[in-house]
Length: 304
Image (tube, rainbow, N blue to C red; front, side, top):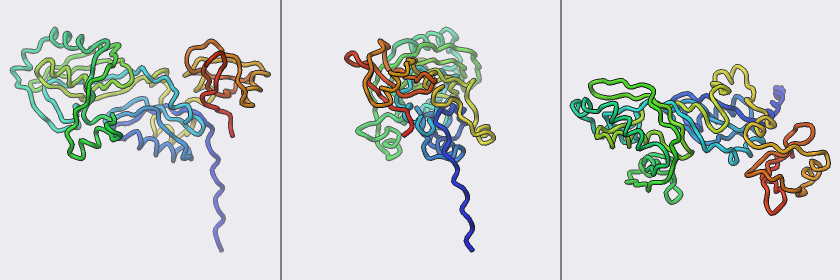
């Protein structure tokens, strides 16, 4: 006699999970675990974190995966520990040592030298990404080319470091450790800042530890660990709240909301960039952008 099938678990509601990623997991690992916790394959992430890094990782669930490519996550904040005295193959603590500074060289580095080096790396700068970054070269990730034995040289590109504030300095015989807050534009590599600071000071340098505290409007205050999600698998923000938190809001009257539901264009709002269209009942209908005097739907968020 065959066993009765277990009832199919209903799909979770759409929304965002703000995860406090642990060290040692890739962003893909986090997505895989979130799929199991939430009971759906429809999970994606907005931006990645290196395995050694911890902190804020934004996941989209169900229809909210449509938001991920449109979220304004172009400003990020990190707590970082930089180590002067050693350069590595990956510009972080997980790489193999390339060179170690002489203790006498480290002893000559003053606080003023460090402050001057940090100042050079603050503001609008040209940064060469790490050779083991996720930057694509002819369609292939740089780190994959390095693993395949290729020599990778990436061109510099403009990034903005809004803040590079030194919090603490610890001096050891073989290294100088710096704790810092870094607020930067998307595409900035904090490990490259550590590498370049060490190169400027003549000591070599690498990233010892990294914790992301904010991504766009999302902070650690709202983030939960994967273990906490296992105990209580709930969204951080439902779809309506997610759009309201991440985009300018346009509230529609009943007639205009009905037009949006029928795929009709509506008058422009005069709002710069992408914004959310909300029905009178507070439910989000779509993301839209003004174009030639009308509001064009960028992403339809109504259920099929």
